[in-house]
Image (cartoon, rainbow, N blue to C red):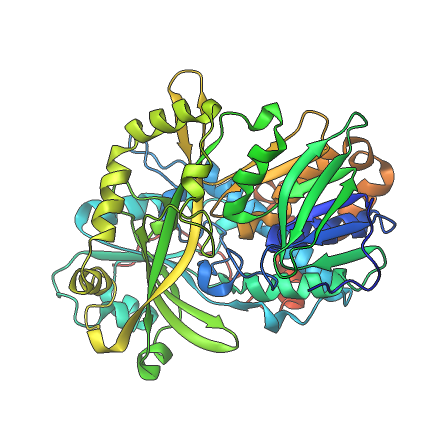
Length: 512
């Protein structure tokens, strides 16, 4: 099924493979920067945002590092490392600004369709974990990006914040929580649909579904020939483009390997699946209003950080707990069980074996997760909701992620958590690999890609001016400019109908 207004452009400027949040973001950015660009978008499935960007297949957390404890590791000397949290926080602010610009200019749908305010909280129990959270609060609350963070060990205060989490909990259990009231819940599936709905209405942009990319080949003029097969009709065709972006989620690795570029050699993938426990009791759903993140088990992947999560999906409030990690040889939720095997190459076998040896605890963790019984899953839930009843919850399959494995000079191969952009030496092709916190930081990731692949245009006065118009903090650090941070948060909150930043506490006094 094609949704293009005109016939297929056989020689567009840009080809985007995959109709998820990354391709949507890149398409909008490029058309805003260069309105005359021609873009062809090809999706393997029959709908937009049907894989990783779908609301049921990701956490929906506007990842700003407010609550995700894995972004602030404790170092050997006991101090808290905050650099990753700051980087992710800065990136999410850039996304907020870009979305606010698109809403304010009337380019995309109203913000109520894709974003809402919800407190982001971290919750821990046990003396050692409480001490860690206290140190984390003391480190982060000094930084402009985390102004307004609250901390408490007072059970009465915590019952006020998160009643479900506190009810039925032992009175003598040592607990603590942090809270950022300006956290957000983002429906990236709805946002992706909003952005594609707007961009495909522009001249020079066509969108095509049920299109399988079978081959990628670069010619002597550095243009790429993209070979396609229509999965419904079997019809084959080719498109020749100056630039190709592979944003196909778990399918990106196979396409990167098909391109044959030397920069892609040595990359492999480790698939991790996920499941949620979804609440079916409306009264329970109504009583929880927060994203409550805890500490991940040792050896678990980032996408498995446990959280009791209040969401809005398809206009309806939901309550989820998880995700529970699992292993599947599929690279996509709607993929093939042969995905892992077919990704093997002579260039990546050694890195994959080396990464596997180094990550035996992860393998054991995944095996244990797969073997979990329903009672064991409920036990994990009751760590965050002690009074949870089995009959109020059902198990649902979540998304599929592919963690990046790449060559390493010292270790042979390493397993990377996060996202990785692989770019050809001439900048004519780029592929996005990896997972969380990708969607929340999509704008920053795509800006980096544009800088690498379109360097002359990116550095031109015209594009620089347009980027500053779309992203007012462009080229500046909000974490180093408290006034600008507060000003832009106020603006984006107003435009996106979000709760504004709360006043910073007068001190870091701990509430017991």
